[in-house]
Image (cartoon, rainbow, N blue to C red):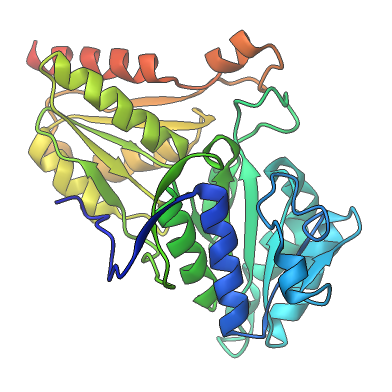
Length: 340
């Protein structure tokens, strides 16, 4: 049975990814008055992607706060609120705009606990709608998660399902450390089973979405979903692909990846971010530096985004990031190469 089996389910309903995030926010705010949401247009407007919805009407403008257009200022306010005992959830309207908040996230939030010898903590969550596929062009379509996975002190999550979107957000709000959650914009309307009660999905634990024997495909966020679809097509051609959804890219669940590669002897890593120095490079290096390298029957393949800004043109936009067809082709070639 896949490792993402619903935990402690008393009621299963189908919600969209956006609805699951909203429900998590509402349950966290009901349970803990220290939790509040703030960002650009999260209040009366309901969020740029409709995620916060009616939360401002439920909890008031003191806990669902529309902010000025200043990502650096918003992030600084979140750090200050967190170290003084609050549990802020900050939404960056497009993940690309997080570049304006790098000082507060990288030099302050990530380091304060270390610099104060553990006597201070920064329990803040940053929600980051990201990714391509909406025709929003180069400055609104990036996948920047690898930047933050490089920074000690930050946790970085990429839930791919409504179930995980809710459970990982609640786990992140509980966490005493700063957590960044990248929510792919194309996933907001996808639907899945989500328990009504508050539950947590462990940070740092990958999910095996599909078991297989011929190769391991590792992805996260929308790429995990595309990998599952590709695995269905591969199965029709007699190729058994095991699909691992990372869910968390820092900390990363290397144990699950390693166990899978020992079984399948082949590894394909798929990610939307730019291929160069991306998540695939790190996973490849981790395998190469471990005893699992000896189990490989073929070189590791990285299937990442193009070394170019995301184009506006829809045909070029799709060509700039891996698609389902690309995963099928790469997986087929990898299995054939390993059998040669």
